[in-house]
Image (cartoon, rainbow, N blue to C red; front, side, top):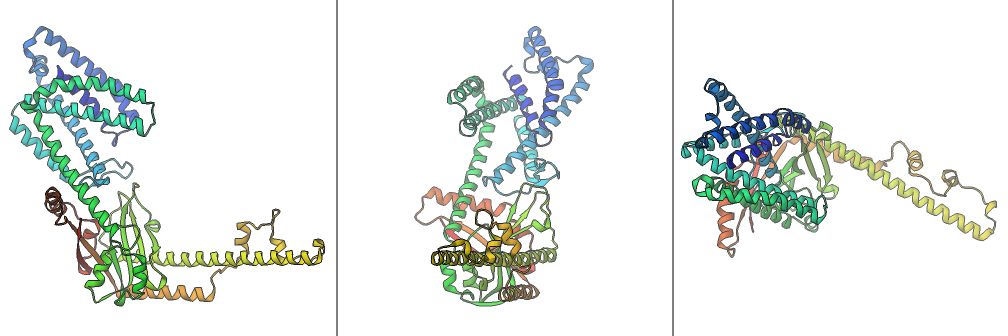
Length: 501
């Protein structure tokens, strides 16, 4: 009866694994009105049949069916198995996607099948993997006994892990009382330990299979996370300092040729170390350099006007910018590179104009504050000399003062001229915009970095094995970065760099 109880629990759990496709209310109504009554009647009937035929425990489901209903029930059971497997497949997709988002699994191709629900996804590699493994497992065991034993170990393991994680969430996230959390763990943990003690005896009879799969996936996830963290820490640690960039000067120690260089990297701040590799390898560097960092946000589509976020990296004469390109999970990065380049330049020009206006506005407000302070000081001096404050001539500043003696920000803004930029600032902006347009006419070059990590010679043997072989194998066989797959190959300039960790 233990496998039967586990199947009941697994069936209910599989329904809630489909929360990415259905709402909570629909699952609750379906479980209460349809699933629970059917399960209750079905298992009560099987229990009654076992009381009269104890020898039919191995084939209780099909033996308890009347002869005239065998084939209809067989068809329904097959369809039910297909539906249950679909729920498990969807849950697997969700777990893999969350692991990739946390940096704990190699990059795979994820296809979003809905523009409204982010949870509806399809991962082709995992789907093929599940199909092949199902065929291998069925062909290897050749009976339902071994598969049931493996399933029982897997289900009890999931139940224990879920209970442990929920207890941690109660303590760390929900801030639940300690005794309540421990009571939850004791009640549910005791029941699950009883189940675990019952299925541990089946490890040699097929229960080893989920343990082997779990060990393999744990090694893959740990290796990928360990290597990725070391690589990112190396990139952050070896960033080029701003003092060094200033010492190089606006020419970056080389020749600046017309053109726009798009350097793809994963850093959202600072100058990546790969730029130094380009400066050492190339006789010249582009007149405008944009560090592009691609980020995916949890919305279906990002509007075109909100696609790019720019920030200036160095002083103006360096012509270096950072660009964060944001994409939704339904955005398709098409191969129309000219449209991408045109939109990027238009967004960069808008950023430069907005930056110039903000700077001019700040300068005007600062000048007005200085004038206000000077006027106030002048009035205080006049009051000190004359001794009669009400006989002084009112200044124009007084007409702008509020009741409290200070002007509001809206009044300050309203007093500014329509064009807040001076002629020098306007000329500087036009010069920078013309330089951007000239660089755009000269063409774009996509600067890609192939960063690799290797363990130091003095590292332990296990670290060398994990980094130099296992992690390197995963990097070579996982899905390439977004930049490598969506740029024109005729305009690519790639430089390799090795980080010693």
